[in-house]
Image (cartoon, rainbow, N blue to C red; front, side, top):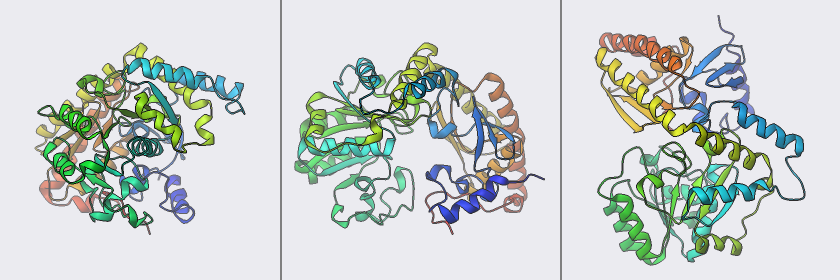
Length: 438
C-alpha cells in the first residue's frame, strides 16, 4: 500500500493556504482528486520523485511548460550556482540584465528596449500598463489567457463568464474594482470580424490589442497581418503574449515564424528553464512610456533570473531545442491517434506540435480523462490529456509512455463499452476549471 504522503500534506495545505496551491494548474484536483502525489522531493530530466520516494516519468506539463530543457538541467544549474556563490542580490545592479537585453533585442531586431519581471502574469500587467501609458487610452481588446491581474479579470465584470473560452471557466471577478467594467473586451482567435466590431465601438479609446500569436490553431486568412493593420490604424499597441509558446516553435517568439512584429512581446516560462524570469521587450517609442509610469520592484533586480535565462537561451540555440521538441510532440500526437483508432476511441487533437492535447469525444469526457490519469499514474507516469514536450524526453521515454497509453486506452474502451467508467474511478472526477475548495 502506498503511503500517499503527498495527499496527506495537501489536506493540511488546504487549511493553511487558500486554494491549496499557488497555481491553479498544479492543484491535485485538476488531475486526480485524492490520489495525485501533489508534492515532489526531487526532479531531474523528466523524472519526478514524490514524498514517498516513488519515481514517475513526467509526460504531462513539465513544470507548466517552463522546463523545456528538462528538470535541473546541469548547464543551467552550473550558471545559477555560480551566480549564487557570487551573490544573487546587491545594492548595485546585476550586469547580466544588460547582456540579456542585448541578446533579446538581437534575436528580435524589431525590439529596442527591455524590462524585466519574474513571472508571466506580472509581466503581462507591466505590458498592459506600458501600453496604456504610451497611448493615454484605457480600453484593451484581447484574445487568449493572460494571467490573474485586475486588468484581465475585469472581463467578467461585463460578461459573467467572458473568459470561459479563453482558458478557464468559472473565474469570478471578486475583488476586481467594478469601475474597470467595460475596459477589457474579448475576441476569438481567427475571428477578425469580432476585433473589427470592438474597433467600431471603442476605436478612439483603444489602448492595446493583446493576444497570443498562435492559440492552439494556425492563423488563417492572414489573421495576424490583419490584426497588425488594425493596430496601426487605431494607434493601439499590439502586444504578443509569448509566455507559453515562446521558444517552443523557433528560437525566439513564435511571431518570427509568421513575420508579424508586435509593439511589445512578453516572455517567461521556458526562457529560464524553471527559474523565475520574465521579459517585456518592445519598440523604443512604446517602451519609453515606462519611464513616465511607476513600474518598479526589488526582486526584479536579483541576479539568478537573468543568469538562468542566458544559460538557457545559449543551450536552446546549441541543441536546437525547438526541433527536438517538435519531433517529440509529433511522435506523441501520432501515438495518441494510432492507439485511439486501435481501441475504437474517438478523440479530438488540439494544440501546437510541442504543446499537444487530446480530448475524448464522449458525454462523460472528464471522467474518461480522470480514468486515464489514474491508470497512467499506476504505471509510473505523470500524465493527463496535455503534453508539454521537453528535450529531456528521449525516444525510450516516449516509447514506454505510448506502451502504457496502449494499455490504458484499452481499459478506457472496455469501461465505455460496459458503461462502468465511474465505478473504475478510485476518487472523484477531476475539476475542469476554477472551483472553490472545501
